[in-house]
Image (tube, rainbow, N blue to C red):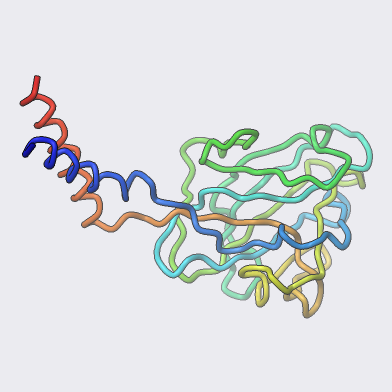
Length: 219
């Protein structure tokens, strides 16, 4: 009985750390699309988001694209720091890429990240995905081409019901505007994962050690 109780306690210690949920910090995919803008000719495009109130890691992003023709262009999805003036700054990480010809001819959400969801395009390995608390970052979408109007990023003029969209910014080759002030934002969702506190890590190590000890003892 004591051994069973100890194992239950150890599992209870381990579960919170193992199941750290992702948290959305920007999301306007739940609202209707108003239009779409060609990435190759009007871009590169950038959309800003504000990080969580605690240190976190970029987990997943979803972007709504549409294709209206065919070409050999490739879209690069990138993470940028802010310049300090509400414009994209230094590149932090090139996250992933997607061939334009693989994009659907209807509005479709494409997910990129580390969660391993079905159909998700995995981030490249070894990236710095750490996000400082309460800081502006940018998601950039850059086409390898400059002349095609095939690949487009969806835009929505609806602010009601969105998360973290009002007060952020979007950029194209014409300049930067604030969402719903100078223009409508690109449609995306950004999810982050909390960085475990040191105490949580120690508890997890203790819980794992307890399970190993009990397993050997009962063997």
